[in-house]
Image (cartoon, rainbow, N blue to C red; front, side, top):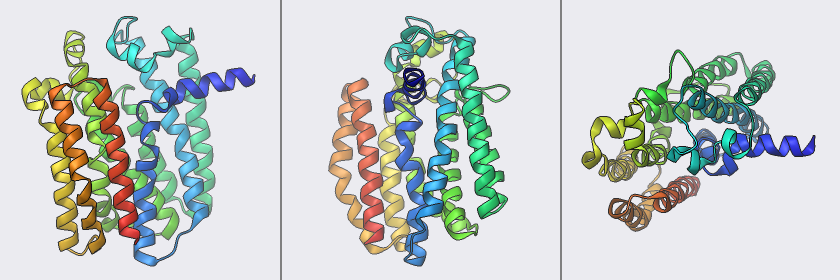
Length: 296
């Protein structure tokens, strides 16, 4: 039994290598940072409860992703994404039904936890959780299939904003449009992680009839998207300071520009997996640095 639990944890988390569990810290920080910035306090219990409770949905999103990619015939033994993320059907020898069952179990756990949270902190937490489920399941699941309709990046941004709202509401028992505005830079900086993978698999995805953002934009224009995202991220920090949304210390996060420029430049010269992982680390660096500076 212990080995079976370890197997499903490894499969659902993909070893922490690829989204969405890979982005966990970046998802949960903005709501808590904003509440701390506004009030000077931090409520550890709601933060921990909500942070733990979204993990089953993130796991289910990965399980449904593997299930539907295989079911629709997109993930084959030789496909690039199968090798990169070690598709569980080929690398762990599990069945597609195994993925579906554990995906459903994860969703049930997710809703049980958020039913408890909504009882404690208000019904809006459950409403937000339902929207979160639609985004997570709908990434590959019918009738949505955001991943196959060039909407994967948009769903990542919306999911990040939604989790920020979850955390902030749990901390404050209130909803604020300002929280969404505050979290936008944190959300858009997540886009390159998914975009780079879609760029890497562009030729294969096109051959399978999958529509992704790099396919729509074309290879040449797509090469500039990660750089554009980082530029927007840094510009928003400056604008937010000028508009008194972020404190003056946040501007010091511009000191990460050389690292970001280096990572983007390296990827543009040689867009392979090594620099995808490096870009993921850059996103964590920018997220953590910005958060710490806002709290100073």
